Image (cartoon, rainbow, N blue to C red; front, side, top):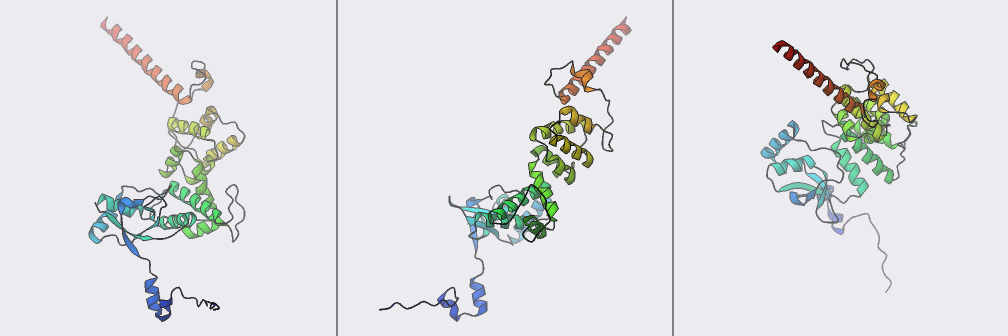
Amino acid sequence: MKERTKIDLGFTAYDEMFMTDAERAQIRKPVVEEIPIKDLHPFRNHPFLVKADEEMERLKQSIAQSGVLVPALARKRKEGGYELISGHRRMAACRELGLKTLPVIIQDLTDEEAIVTMVDANLQREHILPSEKAFAYKMKMDALSHQGARTDLSSSHVATKSDTAAEIGRASGDSRDQVYRYIRLTNLIPELLKLVDENKIALTPAVELSYLTSDEQRALLEMIEYEGATPSLSQAQRLHRMSQEARVSEEDILAVLTEVKSNQKEMIRVPVDDVRKFFRPDTSIKQMSETIVKAVEFYTRHLERKRADRDER
């Protein structure tokens, strides 16, 4: 017997042919499941911090009184359990409250889809650190790049309709160039990035400093701690140019940072060459400074003892 040809009428199931639109919408609603917290795992390389701050305390109070009002989102892991896509703060609050489960919607998402969803969900938070936004933007840029979108992290051309940075910016309220600025921050060493989060280094100077090598950044960090001042935009730009010319030494950084600035401490200036002869060639500026201070303290105590001896006579 000849097999009958199957006609696709566009229905997802035979039963839906006899349903109303309202009934179809109802059965297609996401299913919320109570998942044991022990089976939920943080998103890999999650860029957003879960902090024990006032917001967390308010969240805990809300959950204690009314439960979790918005379900978390997760996907199944190949190795078992679930990877949390959004809801890390809710999970942490529930764990601190001693709850054993979390309401979760399970979705089947690719790696790229999961990253985009995770970033977009967390960028809606009220307070976001520059470092969080920096790594979130980079993760989303990379994910969209894998999906075929055009990206170019090494330059900043005129935006086009296929410009991924512009699309990311529109979704979060930042300009295309601002997205690139934040992504540049991922090239900073953690200690300098922390200073950006603490508002001790502004975003634009930090972008300039991100072009320094890791060794140059660590030398700069040492000088920042020694001077008690951070680079201005013009100083950061000068250090950037010096790095491109491969001539950034500790002395160069010190010379730039010791320019008169409004946020700089009053200091005594001594040419490095006048004191370097008393130290090993590999001694850092900071180590020389600390040794000089100790030497002055020792000399002061020596003079005080001599005066005391004369007074006793």
